[in-house]
Image (cartoon, rainbow, N blue to C red; front, side, top):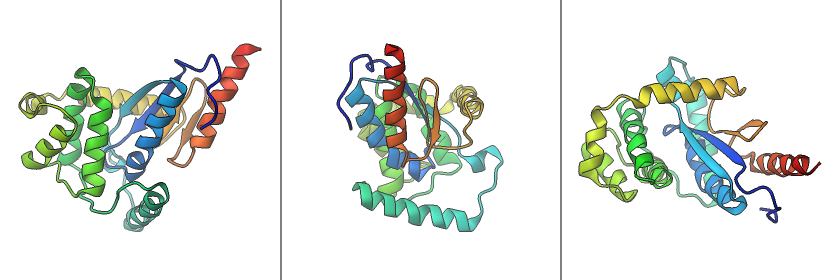
Length: 205
């Protein structure tokens, strides 16, 4: 990360995120670090995974993604490998907790705890025991959190997030949106940084 120039603090950065995306998980820590370093206004917008939006993912692609994600995890020293695929109920339950975590001011902690549990601890988010473990790891109260599981209001928000992502020119996660640039991929932080610095320089002109 480069030196923080004046005028960058408060600039927007949006992360489109999916609980089923290993790349979203791999991007989290670096996204938080970049946002904190530059004082950015980070907004995380969860979306449903492609297969839960009616899009098919070939088996070969699924295997490749896991192998590639494992390589990237080793490169960035991120715990990875003991995986419990949350597709279906696991994703839906994690999404249902999202508004509660946001309300409690612990969305960062929830995304980190849930993604870490799913992609490195083999936690089954589709079960009460598994979800309770993730919720408490995020510093949230399980008895209060579980009440949100019957609230489907997150679905409209998730669809709004998907529409915003598509309108900005992306098709999947993790995607990052600055003031005027959309980039896709957990390996595009240098591009994101360059876009932020360029926008700050433009403001001075």
